[in-house]
Image (cartoon, one colour):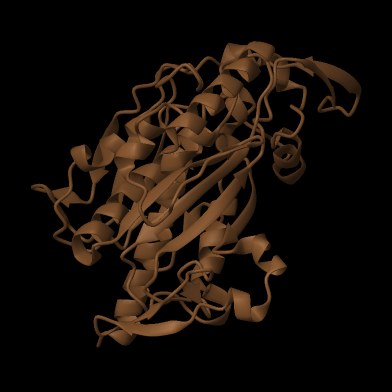
Length: 360
């Protein structure tokens, strides 16, 4: 169904933005993996609101609780249920949205589909739904790191027209976490922060690009044709709120090259097949080739802006709406751990699928 992602490592998220809580059920996690809330909480801390002056000031601790699937500190192989309580919901801030659709939000489309909607905070369409993804992604990430030596890292590459200079082969987590915008290019990060703060004061918003890398992925992960590795990564990223584009490796820039310029030549290095360049982004024919996987995700400006805009009501009358509430003037800093989580979910699912079919 629409709330479940993955084939062998399956996650189902649940909950609404201003309901009692949000969470996820993880089914297919291998047994005997050492797991506690301490393995999950750091990633939720990176995603939570209120962590800096350039993000939403909703005051949520986002403390995770493990309700099932773990016994004496190890996974059982049975479904793992993770829950985070909502403690700072303020539905009164959305009272006017009870009958009015917010421009460029999912209010109208949810109403058109279901004939009903959870209007406080957007319900399931809120980015708060991604708590479940990040919690599940922390488990996937632990498996990938401990079993396969895979490292996943994302960072803010661009905010509006400000573009950072980052080498995906050498960037480190400490560089990403060195500033509140999560851009490893320190000089550019300062410009990004200043722009986001100006947008907040003006009641406006900006978008940008997150780049993600996965290092240490062995050759052979992925499926031909429909479940290509890059296709599943694209689906994962475009399922995130506010995403508008995906490109891997050379992406759209590759159209400016000729075939001889774009190809990645093969060589043997230290007994392994390697490529001398990586314009493929670590994936060829839908299957990983052993090089670093890297891709970019475009995020639109936050739809909620503090200026009056035209809209319509649920009974289809023209009106205007000026938004209220606590919102991110730029979603990118908090979206970094979400992109990492979805990357981990795709990769661990394909790792298990590869093992099931090819390692027998």
